[in-house]
Amino acid sequence: MAACTAQVLSLYRKLMKESNKFPSYNYRTYALRRVQDAFRANRSVEDPKMVEQLLNQGRDNLDMIRRQVAIGKMYPTQKTIVEG
Image (cartoon, rainbow, N blue to C red):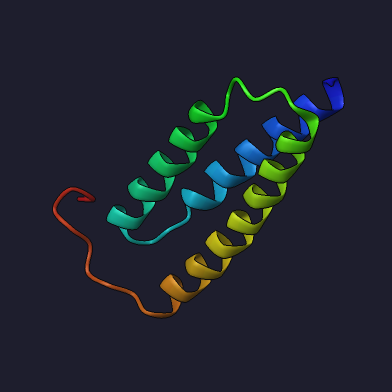
């Protein structure tokens, strides 16, 4: 179970780090909020099969976020007032 917890925490950190790379403030805050909400919602899951399924889903989402960040950097936009 300790290895599983380490995998979950590692995935969480990676997702948060990648989500923070979005050039757009709106996408960045949305992605960060979605990651946090998903992990909070599944905090109580203890079934090993379900945990593995959620880890795989998280890894797929990490790949998607990486692709979206790369695409977002190709097409820069103006910063919003919130970004300063």
